[in-house]
Length: 405
Image (tube, rainbow, N blue to C red; front, side, top):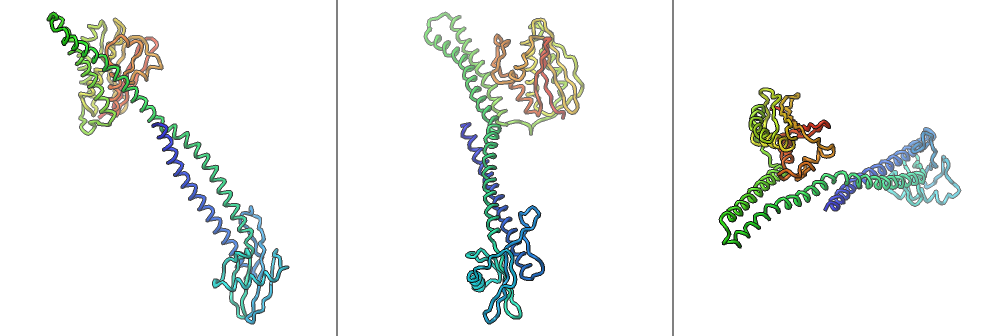
């Protein structure tokens, strides 16, 4: 699928490039032809008036190039004679006479004699006609050379654009490829997480069905195991639905209301203080500026705080300290949750926000590895950012930056 998408991108890009190169090439060749024609006709005008020596200057690097020409006067009685010429072979009078007759056969007063490679101009005078002829062989060869040069440059440009399109396609499709891979990994991880409680439910249900004569205590324990597995599956499904709604862009931004973030932070600190105490750790609200207001969903912002504080309580060392703060930075509110524990490796500072990701220190803890992913999703929904920093001394800090209301 990704390969097809990449090639589709390349084909569309090359179709546009081909159309663009074709238009540019046609415009250049057409402009060259018109310029050559205008110069040739200008030479004819000067020749027929005999006001100056005609010259050719197109594509000549500034140095005039004389064109072969000759002029003819034709009398009403049919007599004709050459009045002037330059660089034109006059050794074949029959050919010259045939060219004059061919020019008279054409109705237009000026045009091209393709068989003789001549451009002519005819003017009536008081005693006949005056005719000027210019050799267009140089005009044709210049036009052919310009056309071939355009084709060569177009081919080179096409190859270069094709290579650039291949590189650009890889760069443009990379986010889609990563998203596809993450989706596959997400489905695999979700299936794995659902498999455990489902196995517990099915095995205990089988025991209840098969062991009808079992003691009431055992049957009650099996029923409790089924309920616990069901609650675990319900929690996981709820978290997956929350992430799915976030991925699909089903946000409630239009229903956001002003939220007193100071009050939320203070409430979260009061709620988690006994939780931290029972875990043998301390939680302290070190700083909370007054009247910090953001626009958002109070319930989701409370969940974000709960996830960060629950994460800190889980991973702080026994007897370690947890701090919570809220302050303004310009037009943004910044929440910081710091726990005193094992440093997070640098390569995991971003990975811990991936769904179902568990670092080594988290293998013995409960949970699905979705908490921080949900917290970041809530922050992004509120046009905010969530990131982490780790101090080698053993202080891990999670920052959440939200725009002020």
